[in-house]
Figure 1 (tube, rainbow, N blue to C red):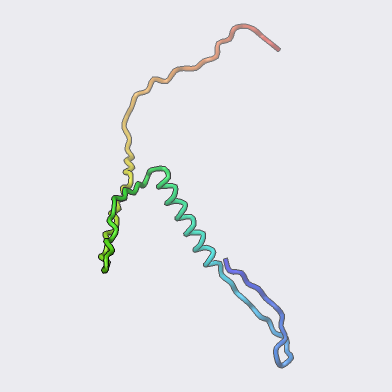
Figure 2 (tube, rainbow, N blue to C red):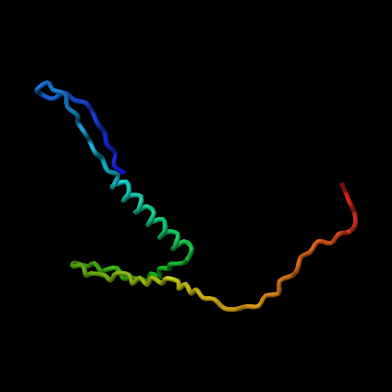
Length: 105
């Protein structure tokens, strides 16, 4: 939502004027979306829904000249969610009230 601020000013020629400043909350909105996305990703890794297997990489050998090293291989596995239905027969107990004839009033 845009914020509008009006301010009465006096122009150079002595006449009254209105200075209008409009500000949008786009930066704040983008920051909130980025923070929420990071929180969702953090929860997915914390609960084990996403898993990152990082394999060992090699550092470069540095002599008189340096050779480039290898980046570690990352294998990200996401869990598979399977949704389905099947028919089951379940025995449901019956519940009743037994009157013992005692009238407490």
